[in-house]
Length: 345
Image 1 (cartoon, rainbow, N blue to C red):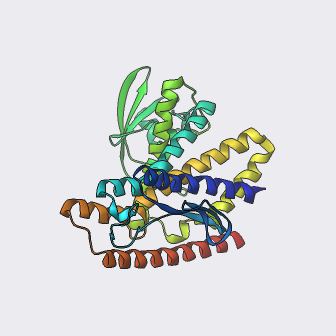
Image 2: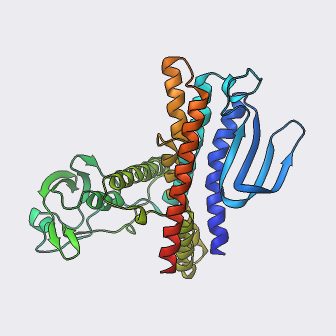
């Protein structure tokens, strides 16, 4: 059952991503040859005469929206991708990640509407630690850390993680009054500690407008977290062994499902939606990275074309994307191998 749920979550996210490309292609008069879910040989396929082929493929990861003349020369063929203005092509390529963010927002509305958001409220301070000595008290609301706006407890927790050991200037509210405190954490056997405790389970429900606001902020939170994680990876704070691919994500979904079963269907649903928000926002960010073979890499070539008003050599672009695709495949194999090793161990 958990594997089926994982496949449903993956499929939803991929379909929405490819649907973005598909709809913008149709809006711009581009012929879509095939819209598929999965990779490899076709299991099911349907095509009306002269229309788009819709396919379900063997491997349940990935998908595609194959457009006429997407990677070739502009031969002037009606409905080809390359025959359209550069602005139209940019909108088609960017639509996939944008639809991922839209999906994250819609799912966030359900979560925030159902259980509220997690404000960065101090639920306790430990005596003898820096936060207590600086004057923080239970009930204080943390609003900024080194100038960065904090609206969720998860942001507070992540900021400490991504800036381990750093001195932080806290801004916090107490009874409507704003205070500041510059605090240096104490190094313990369990890492650097400020002596502040809180919880993501402390939730505050709000009205319709603020529900929409915090739903949008939920999307921002996951985008920001993904970018900070990538920055940590680039600077050696984490390694490839700490990353998870499809196998690792399926394992996480399975574990979450098993842990949630005793709480009932409602909590299974909430946890699966939370995971879907994380994954779809992550997919949107990763696809916008300016790397060959990704949507972001294609956007780089299109932006260069828009600036110089001349397309980069199609052969050069194709070679760059091919090399990028091969490197991505190697990376996926390495990550998948690490996922399997972690599961076995």
